[in-house]
Image 1 (cartoon, rainbow, N blue to C red):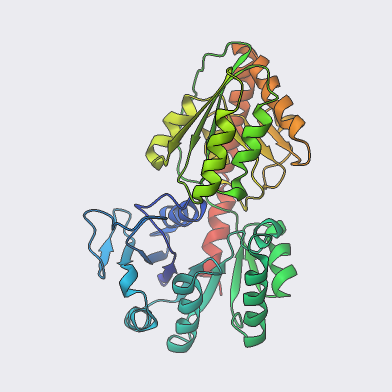
Image 2: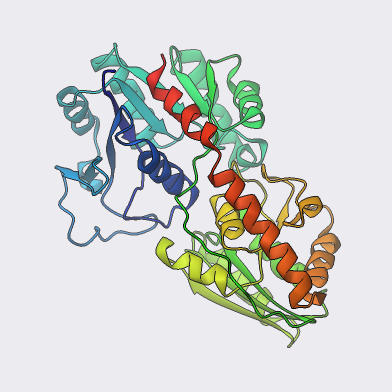
Length: 382
């Protein structure tokens, strides 16, 4: 079979990691599919999310081959222009343009326009990445609705296929854009080699972890407020870059006002390679997010044997029945506090049952072979 060449556009990519889920989604896609009748070339920035300094040791404005065989073209901010994109697109051979996201001028909108003009024979696939979900649309709603209305009127998404990660996202896409072509393919996991982890667990004590950017949509302030009602001893470690300084300051103030038996530590960003060790040192993930299209960090928690306490605004549902955690309505902060108390009250034997169940759920998802085939069909089949 002919090798299918994919040109992928994304604002941030490896070695970056601070943008979270979208970077992980695309990195996993490339890791799992590169060389399986598909080759990837990625166009991205030379800086990480919320950073201005280029990645050390990486040359800009040239194709660089990574260890997996994919190639990456890193662009400086000063080089972002339609002229640059036109040159790149016109001089690069590809069969499919894969565009990550909706609203980025230089990595979503302009690549779509230029590809359509200069490479009309290429197929175009757009990964919505949860950006059309109600929870995402509620952030800066006027600007987003105006842009999407203009996009529909001007035919921006004519002859484009959208990548949806499941039926819920397909419904979100079509609720906003009408009956556009959609292909469903679940997010691919990172390859995991996690072994069983034995944790010490004393009744009345719990170590909680949160891995997310410090931004309102992740609901860190909600997590801190609900902890005020927890009677057990809690250590809460928060890892993630600051996206909103004012919001981060509010979260630090809330943390400082918690009772003495609740300890909160803000650690800043954590590199992906360090995450397994962080989960191994924790008992549970606390993430009352306002909405996740997938939630890679939730899967990573499962893979690390960490039960989760999350909102019901993610695809991970019915967790309590599986003894893998709790998915709870945001309208009931007391339910989150009760879940934390329940896990805190467990002894080592009872907690190990939940830890093993979480790891088994992560293993089942990671080994689902149909996910790879679904994602291959994004590119192999027209």
